[in-house]
Length: 135
Image (tube, rainbow, N blue to C red; front, side, top):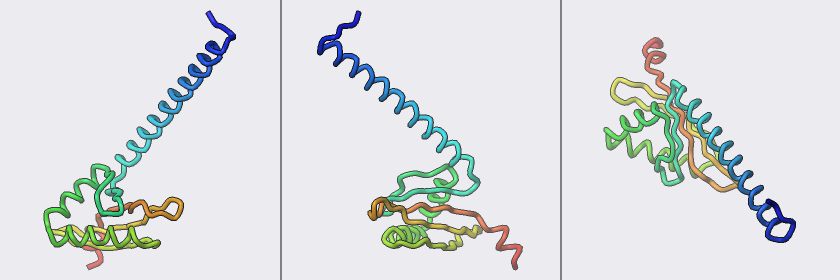
């Protein structure tokens, strides 16, 4: 039963808003799942840090590299200082870290929105095989 009075119109408006919210949530969930699938399938490590150098997001490979960095206090502090340095700049940064028997290339990019620094993305690529072949 529907009514055309103010209550009926308000109910219709609430129902429409509810449908719109459900649709938006469904779209956002789909986008999140798609992003997770894409990032998880990368063979490289991918991480996102806030401007304080704290990790916000990481795929599995990125998380394992981060844990490796944490095993050496000196390397970890250097890595965090790079994150903070890049987050304060407007330029991408390419760095190479040699840890244990691994040679890693870090491609770091500051993330901005409306001229405000939000953090840094870090793509970590294992270049050990390439480095050994060059020798």
